[in-house]
Length: 176
Image (cartoon, rainbow, N blue to C red; front, side, top):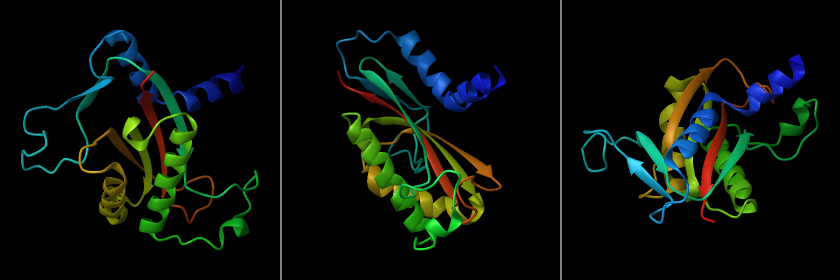
């Protein structure tokens, strides 16, 4: 039973659980847009704060898709074998690009696009050194009109390999 609870809690992070609650509370039968951005005063685009995320996103319709965390590593052995990653560029920019490419591959396999992602959780080593680079690369992939809700959690290390600095999980809503 402990394994079942651990697996469930890992799969349903607090951000994912909040997204489910938001969908259930909002009712998914609306005829309007699938999602609406909700910005607090002073955080909306053009307010001068350059906020790279939105305060909240209201889900009106569509199918919810939970994307597992990815470090952007190619398919590899489990348990992890460090030498399988020796050929990778471990710069923060290259890692973030691989993460975004991986998210794009996952969301397209589910029938969506990166702009369908409404929430991301970033698990990051050394936020002070890496956050600006990660934010800038992610912004390139999102494009100018898309700002998912976002949380960054600073961590000591990632399970895959100590050279990785970023893992991202996401929630998307895809039009039916």
